Length: 326
Image 1 (cartoon, rainbow, N blue to C red):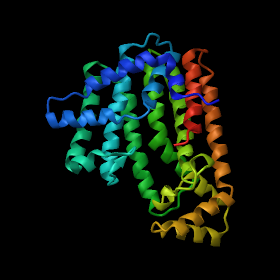
Image 2: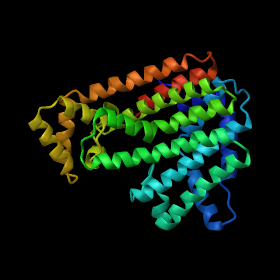
Image 3: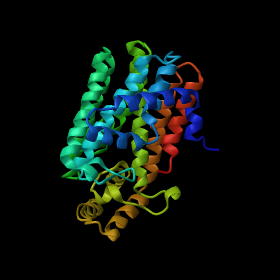
């Protein structure tokens, strides 16, 4: 039987309610327009997976009850991450995020960029006013890596020549660095030593990589979500199933598949041809095995921490993220 997110969250349910209140408070502004937009952002918050990683990581490192620094660390990550998402929607000219209108769709690009800047400054000030320099260093590194990962992907996507090594470099920076920083911030805020913080960071990185591979698999439509979607292929993104399949193909097949990716123009037949090729070449099986390997490596690191309800919840959270249907 699958565990629900509410059940996983049980050991920190009280702290999550308190965090919501504190986070909402940290988003307040005297500028009416800004306050309205902040309210919109808070209402649209998703499953709150990132604060959960922060709180559980703090708890397994002895932060029980959670210190104030842990709440500030979680708020810092949410502020900086939300800033990058607002800017991403401008860069991608995206009108939707999680089924809601994006900030740029409702208030235009200029306001969206300024809102992103405002969120960034709120996060920086929250840390500086409380002397949370260690937390700020961890999260700033993650933001730098996010930007580098995005730029590396843009640079490589033009040529569609991404190797597996480059793919892992990109997702380590683009996706895994954020979950890694959640876990490192949690450990640091609870007063853990440098070796333990690094252990927590590495754990988060492996979870983040498994999480991204799961995302890649959705593009090929698994049993749970019905027919294939092909959004990554449409956008000419090279993901692990496709990279592996191309490595196994002969020169002529490889050329044909790359042609279909490059010139798909949203055509369903070309996208479907790529999906069929990946499935027949064992690309999905390979990606699933790789995802499970990273999951197992993350669990091995997790088991070096003492047994506790927080550790059990973290284990369930990992399985939840790679067994999810959307």
